[in-house]
Image 1: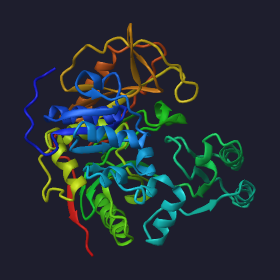
Image 2: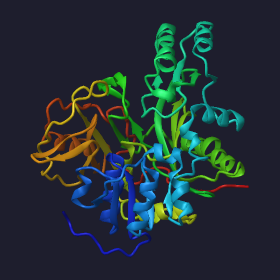
Image 3: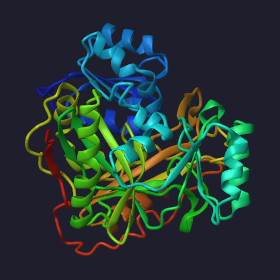
Image 4: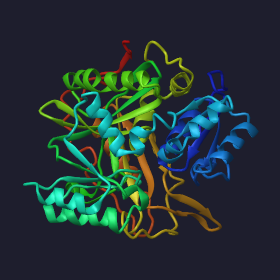
Length: 447
């Protein structure tokens, strides 16, 4: 591993909460920038450069105690569960700078019904919807429509609480599965039925310190498990940035119609947003609408966003946590980045774990292998989850980044490994020689 510089930036001691590829990407980036990094709980990949703590991300009291014990200066909360449960509130109550929203602000992700009603209240563009807490009422509503509607669980369902049916019968089956069979537990006790929006999806991340915001380059995730967007939805099979579907015109509309009204409304309602707001967009004919809000970095999008500003993330994250986002954006480090998820046998349904992974010791310039679901066994590193690794590469063009990522994948092996071969193929880069990522934006919310 290359030597790293001594720490001189804010937050020399950092705790990253979580243990997936998102947290690995954040932790590794901060380590390269000179921070001393701890993770709760981390994974088999993060233990090579940071200190993994035997603390569950969902054990809020233990996370707070770990932050105090290890004299942490900045906590970055990766997954949504602890944020919705109030971890950021608990940490701030102990005087610990925290990157992540309060529980009240985290309802933007924690409840689809809250989010949709918030959007409607503030006239922010989104699909038409109806909310239900009774299965039979929802079924009657569906059967009265002349087209199938998207079915969404109200609560957190690990990215799997959405069904986009092709027929009304499929939609009804999803309602029964969510509300009666409780395949997602209490998360599906209430649901949203939503109009289907045509178009192309994009992930739009905005850092915010409660008043000032910074809009990062748009990324594009690939949710379906197989090539050509076939098969069931997953937590994400790969991503790339920037996403050309978010043109300058689209970006201006997103900021004016979605980002600024959302952050301004959160502040006016007494819940100023600190952390990263992830706007899941649907874009049709350059008109953006909100599919969803997340209150944390996307996974695997984080693996392709981190390289872009490597060298500056500590200042950005600490600034968002403490109300001091920089007035100007730092220079970008790379032009394009792309990541591919290597998944376990059976993912996303009947996942098989415990298989040893070969090829982790190999090295490829401009490529980082982030661990998503791994653990160390006496005989080596093995799979421990559905998404096992994220191979992320950077390049001067998207094609260069794709080539590097897929070349590195050739040297990684575990039983049942599968991945998509078309990550980034949909993108049409209009000017591959352009050395500037479009649309880095700072802004001040108007009162």
